[in-house]
Picture 1 (cartoon, rainbow, N blue to C red):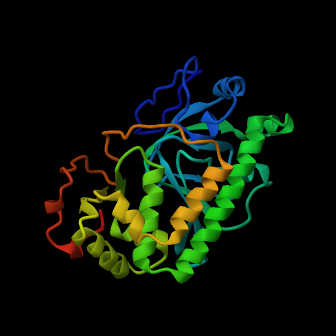
Picture 2: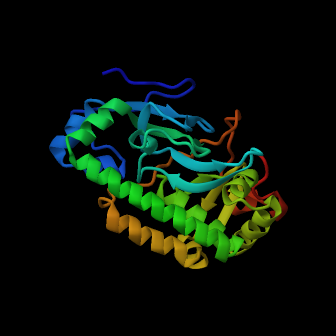
Length: 284
């Protein structure tokens, strides 16, 4: 089976004879069924801002290190994030729903790897009543819970709490303790003003919870980040753990997340990297 390589991406490792994919849904399959799926999965490199699907999609994607945002786009072109998908889920569920008439985009927020499989193969598996059908159904339920929780959070909780929640969600779907998160991106994802994000981030910086440099956020004190987040984060984690297969134990990668920029120079993130809090989350 040929390995798919997107333009500008490096070739991801794939060994179907022994691989246990670093995706919560795939790794939760019974061994025999997982091996059958591995015969059809294509490893791909997902690039920043890549649009995976909008109204319809030809593939179902299973991210392993990439993070994808589901964005609701208004007629005026503005957007807000309604859900986040990483190594805990799949992108392209409209395959089961005869397309999507709502203005929702699935856009890569943090570059990385994923597996993809053609839609007709997914539908064939669904017709067989396989274990994957049950897992994807549970994932759809978890996604509905995430969207509902986000709506409540955006309405009733402070921007400080929302930012902490979003950083934690990103960390849970990444193999690193760092995230790619510019000021403009954070404001767009939360649907708030850039200035509000800067103020919230300044408080986290001054408390020693995060550091920031060149579009990278490094979390220094996760316990404090969880303490400052609202109850929405913990409630959502309980729902995901109830619905989805148990997480695979993973070790944090030493590789830094890839920013959406043409620059390849990224200085080491330290607390001294940010001398002026007003520079937090500046444009990359």
